Length: 472
Ligand SMILES: CC1=C(/C=C/C(C)=C/C=C/C(C)=C/C=O)C(C)(C)CCC1
Ligand SMILES: [Fe+2]
Image (cartoon, rainbow, N blue to C red; front, side):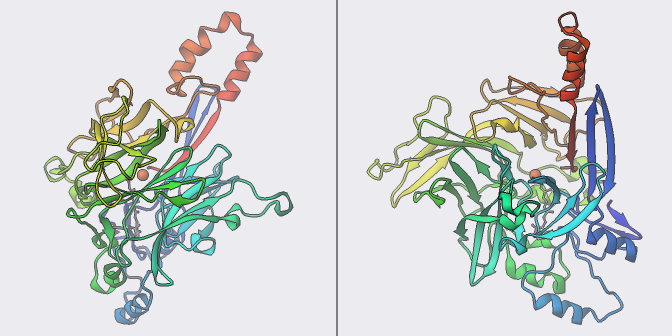
């Protein structure tokens, strides 16, 4: 919802969250949607105007009261009280589902009815002011996520934390969030301007975190309200800086001592990461600048959209390779990657530094997804939206990282959203997706002579899946 009463949000990442649910049952898809009844939503509807600030829109709650007294109370907090308009993703935590954004708030939801339940403040369980909306899950369903703790006890840190899927027997019925554990913290290079990040990567034994020179200026953020500017204006890309690659060993819960880095870049989405012959490979969608956020101002969505909204840097899938055991005596300038599978390089430099040069895999894609059963492992397929010079996707893409070939789907007047990969129940192949027509033709009709009706009904029942997702 981009307008409330007479007021209008400025940016695509501001709109009031709409929950979507798709239920695939007996070869048919059922759809429902509901607005997330966040405190933000309720306050806006009650006031019949936007009263809570979002990423690209600064709002002033009390026009009748003295703006400066309100601004003063905002100023006395370095970190403002953020929105609970959880519009980015859905997180599963134990048996509970949460709508998430990147602030310290989440909203529990009922995945069946899409009703909005409790508001959860991450800060009650782990000291973070911001957290990603792209957590990872291990095979047992434990959540691994990370967030930024801003100027807590004089330090700004990136905090990696774990939320268990289940709570101990004697604590049955208790909220898994209460058992959140800090896994590892990394001190930010700068106290007042931590990196912005939207996701991170995991392999079987490691975590990959990119400390990129796309940074959130805390002083700007704490004065944004009084200056009348939005949060987005507090983010800046420093193209002269480096991107630091932190690799955390999950067994020791410590970062590797080698200082891995690459050129300045902006990454929103990690695609996947895995280990191969003593190296860690990770695939990310990279930009050469931060123009993407700029393009999503709704004012650009007019007739001249094509001209006004050309990306200045195309989203590109790149593969990085990091050597896990760096020989301190290796010659300066030598390439530490000897894998046949990639042309990515890692050049040894002095003072235990390693400069990583990626391999370019594919240009023009965003909103990547994989078959999550292959997360952290060798994999072959990326499902994404094709994005060329315009940020609005017109096609769905399936990219094969092995053969480097791709398949595309598009139709006139169709604008796909983020593809979600739903595997066929009992699938063997990585790309065996849950596909209605495919089910109706090869798997269901062809096996008819060999299979009894109850078996077929069983297959159908197992195939019933409920997907709950937000617009992104
Ligand atoms: C409100 C708010 C934020 C919100 C960020 C959002 C809403 C980001 C959405 C990103 C998406 C959808 C990216 C897709 O690739 C910040 C900057 C974390 C910090 C300041 C307060
Ligand atoms: Fe995302």
